[in-house]
Amino acid sequence: MIQPTAAARPAREAWAAPVPIGYRVGPWQVTEPIATGSWGSVYAARRTAPGPGDDDPAEVALKFLPVGGLAPRQQANLRQVAAREVARLARAGHPRLVRALATCTVEDPGRPELDGAVVLVLERADRSLADVLAAASPGRPVPEAGRLLAELCEALAAVHGDGWVHGDVKPGNVLLMADGSVRLADFGLSGELEGTHAYLPALGSQDHLPPEWWTERVSPAGVPARPSRDIWAFGVLAHQLLSGGLHPFPGASAGARTAAAQAYALGRAELRLGDTVPEPWRPIIRDCLAPGHAERSRHTAAGLLDRIGAADAGDLAGRPRRRLRLRTLATAGVLAIALGLGATQLPEAGDPPGSPRPAAPSFSGGELRADAEVPGQYRQMIVNAAHGCARPEVTPALIAAMLAAESGFDPAKRSPATDEYGIALWTPKVFEHWKVDADGGGASVFSAADSIAALGRFLCTVIDRNQHIPGDRALVLAAVYRVGGDNVRAVNGIPPSARDYIGRVRRHLAEFAEPPRGG
Image 1: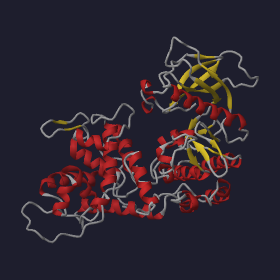
Image 2: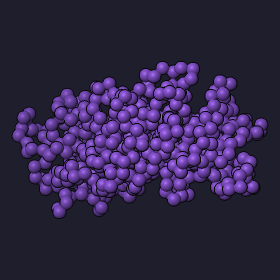
Image 3: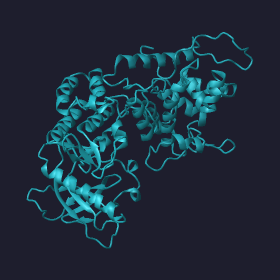
Image 4: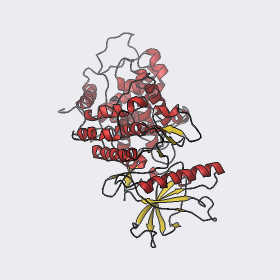
């Protein structure tokens, strides 16, 4: 059984239901944690005595929905969520929907945090799409993405065909069984259609909610929702699977991505799919992410299935030619720097303004050379941070060159005089804005994983605001990081205060980047 690593899990005190290993619920004994959310936590369990059903499996998943410490109204809401899930799963007979085996209530006054908790006994999965995306290579479709999406679409077609809205389609709720097949799970937010709408709790995963959710009025029955809510979520998830985990809307946080989706829905921004999403899938995702319900509702889950089958017939393993060409240009720029041919020549301190300089490539960088002198323990972190951005300017070689120039890859580097720390020499105040908890231990400037991931996020986010600055785009981004975008824009180039630093970055780029193909 594949589970998230310990580093990827939240601290146990952060779990909605912290259940100790070995804890018994009826005939089942908890063996290990699986996942947690705001309302409940899921644990693997093993049957140690005969269960309530003759065909009960030996291993199951226990979903704990605790009520301890909640106000009476919150307890009532949580019990309604549990009852809704039990009712929906009891009717589920489709092979793409997870099965509920039983439900019970914990009676344990000695553990007030668990006493009264509702427990759902579910089929045990091998992993979820959240685990798949966590291990994905950004910029590349995950293995068998087409099949996974087709099977998820089958599940949605079954749910919608029964007159229900799932309401919370997201990677963590799409399970993969031991044979690799897909099961849609977690029907706690689902609702049965009453005419054109279902009424769901005012909850959901922010990254997978459609734009209209934020403007719907909440009635005593809940938030009105239609099947098109699930279609939007499917479109987001399809983009993630086909791009190695990238969200279709830009932003360093769920809130920022939601704002970007809102701007798109209001006609203030365009939908820009990742360059690496295979061409046959692009119109499907665009239809699923239509900005309004009326337009999106024309594309039902059942209607998408045939289109998905045709798209899946294409080759999902290769990258689009456009992306390959951009990467080749990037590495060609680095080779030019190494040979002194046509690369950006930064003005020296004594150069008069307007001195002629050779033409610069659009950007420099590329993948890391196999023999690049980059510490092995940081190589994959650097690659992940770069590939997490769909923009070709942000490359592994650029991030590695910046880290080498900042700290020489020293995660314990300190500069109290300038208030900068860690492998990327972050100022704590600035890091707080861009922080990423990449190792699950709480975001920290002294965590190499966190600092490197935050650096990739920073570079990806500041590209557009500084794209008009002339010169090598990668080096401009490095200067923005070192001295601030205002200083770079004030001189429309590399400020004198950044020249020594940029010179070091440029030299490291030449050392670290792959030569162009055939070079």
